[in-house]
Length: 310
Image (tube, rainbow, N blue to C red; front, side):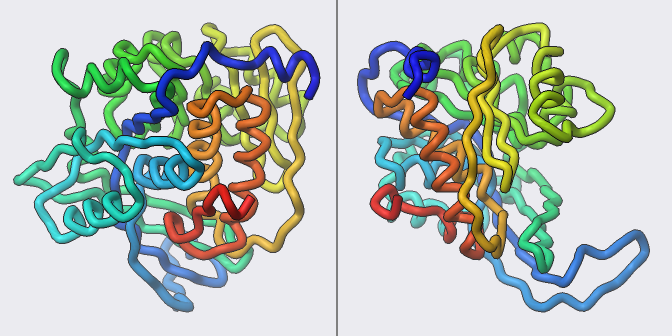
């Protein structure tokens, strides 16, 4: 590991704990030769249902990579909520910060997976949109005690901002679904994780970066300067530290079956490794390996590997 990579290490770890602030969705996965175009109807090859949501996916990924994990999110009053509680109990994920909305439904994601394993996702947030954090209480205390707080954008931005304000550890934002980020939220982020299309969205770029030079140029447009980690699918990943040379990571070539959840696998793995005291470069390298393996398996949570497999 180079001196630059070794320097990308956060302050001393206390507990190995990750708190994930995020969404919980039921996934409806439809497999097809390709996604239909406007006004077009296609026959699918099959469909299945499962549990997912970026928050839940990343929480399970982090737990399977060895971190102690607690999930902060909202479930509806429906059978899906009970399935989530069973899942978290099985995985060993703490649920003291899960809320229940008796008047709403758990979120839903409709995922179309094409013959190349690429996915297109439509999310109906349901009660994820009602996820809040009280100004004081157990949530604030646990966020302050965590070594890593990991969040995505399938819950309200103001909720994430409050979580990051309470956090004393590493604050990771996976900016997905992507869009312009409020400056006050971005200024509280230590590590920003995006893919190439999300990078274009958060920086206001007209087109997606086509090579590493364009990735670095777009990243430089952000007014505040977190460490930016750009996932690039089969092209691997790049860390862009503020004012320093990018660090690139190659991905192993595999035959992708389903890329659903691969980005979440990366984020959860990286968060777990940081919580366990590893430098960012090591955490990213393992995240690339885990995400690559997950893409060779169908499903979201079902595809997430265990640390022993790597």
